[in-house]
Image (tube, rainbow, N blue to C red; front, side, top):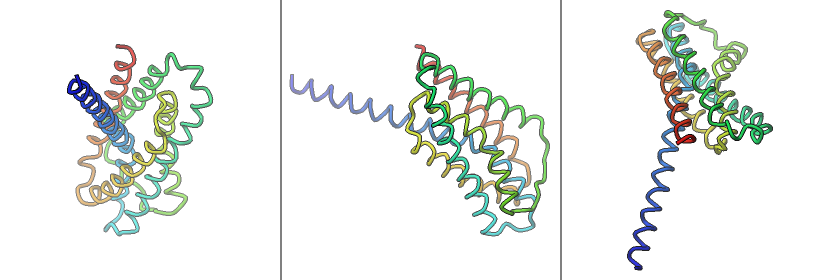
Amino acid sequence: MLKDKRRRIKLFNFFITFVTVMGIFELIFIAIGLSMDAFAVAIGKGLSVDKVRAEHAASVAVWFGGFQALMPIVGYYLGVSFAEFVESVDHWIAFAVLGVIGFNMIHESLSKGCEKSSSDFSIKQMFSLAVATSIDALAVGISFAFLKEPIFAAATTIGIITATLSAVGLYIGNTFGCRYKSKAEFMGGAVLILIGIKIVIEHTL
């Protein structure tokens, strides 16, 4: 009987670990999906300079990563204020938010050509780009409030992944041009849609 109890405890602990790991991977996929807009813009910035310098990479990493971390927190606290009123449909709202963002990213990946960005890395220029590429993260932050996700861990993950991919995108754009730009946006959109479907399935079955 004691062995059976220990076996059940081990099985329970394994299940909790599995769910936690899957949650982490889901968050990472959301972060990658959200970062694709910043990644695409960083590729365009890489095209605009003859040679990428360390300060260029630091600039896109700090601005894009910083705002992608900040916006979900802002969205989360906006969402918390009315989350209790939509608790019965929170998963559908999360699905709608991720779905709309995902479809928009796929549409943009299919309709945009190779655009060379300005070589300006000034505060004004980077601020406007950082805001433009992080609006989707604001909406996702609202959905995190409905799903009661730990926002600071999520925001930190999104920020770090976006900062890293933005710096990488800068070098990719400078070296390979727009070869991977549309593909990255398409894959990012598809990932967000699939995660939205997964959330609905988990809450309805």
